[in-house]
Length: 457
Ligand code: NDP
Image (cartoon, rainbow, N blue to C red; front, side):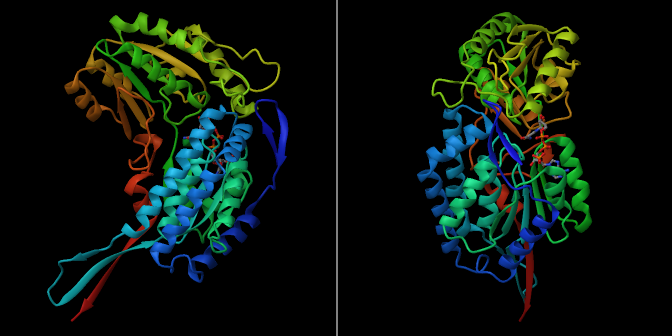
């Protein structure tokens, strides 16, 4: 498989195209490591040390990893550096969990001693997308390893290089053979082979809602555990009483970071009527001041989209938005570069909730501004979507903030901020944004199963 640098459209590397037999070999190695290898049997303290070692190696190779991410994915180097730092944090966080995966003793019949063990699942299949090519590795691999599982991971076809670089670090860390297996390849072949494999105990998937549904069907064969983190069309609600300056900056980050290729991007921006014009004006200025260009250049704040396919898809939505009658306040077209998948940060105003650009996940730097009247109207419009990954509210009214946090159907709600993620706190979707929660203690629940033991006196 040729890996393309999205900033230049040149071939960056060639990697192996794994298929079902390669997945099968990886699953066999992972199974052997789980059933007969040391990994699930070593002292938990020792597993902690391995996870800390991986975190340390990620930190030591931070600059190299950040460059690989930027070359492969196109995100600005500053964002790639941040992704590496956050990935290391996830390993540190789960290193701490290894020795805290407690069972329970249960007050059963007095003639019995009854306790519950929290055991690993076994071989975990993991399929990840291209938008966070290292952070997604960390979110999936760290908790699975912390719980004593072994893994078979397939990175996205566009961005396998950060995962491969990570794999080399796990070798350096001295992980026992077969514990982490990374197979590059395409979704419908290698990815599908993981989802349907009868010796894989769990599949954790991040990606599009349509593929998520396919994974669910394929996983039914052996009833493997499934967690799905899927798409979004997240509402970002700005009330008249908000600190408008902060709301503009936060909203711009919420939709334009990573070229808008973020599952929880704040792509539907609802603005209360009195503030609408001023907000639109200021967000337009913020979009126009973004530096679109070479992602390796430190001052660049927006790079190219990840691939030619994604580029065509986003340009298609820009056309749809114009045809639907939305007005372009900023961007609305490809970037000025002669090569690379650059799209200008775009602000559409006069958007109606019924338009496709307000309903479908664009996964690009495209904001839709929609007016609302009051709290009730805001909640109705915000929840009028098949998705439910995240939402944000900007207001100085604390009562309103708490009320909306409860009314919004989303797995994460931000108040007066956007896009904050922390390994300590769960992340995942309501409705068709998926099920299962990652990060926090929730990932430990995803990667373990309970066993009750009864001992008769
Ligand atoms: P996909 O859902 O196709 O890709 C995500 C991962 O799933 C990739 O590793 C992919 O492999 C793999 N995959 C694809 N088909 C199958 C299959 N049948 N069985 C098992 N695994 C499979 O997303 P795309 O890259 O096609 O992006 C399309 C749209 O999806 C985006 O525009 C965006 O709307 C959404 N998306 C959402 C993401 C999120 O974070 N929630 C992340 C990425 C995309 P391969 O790379 O070879 O296709």
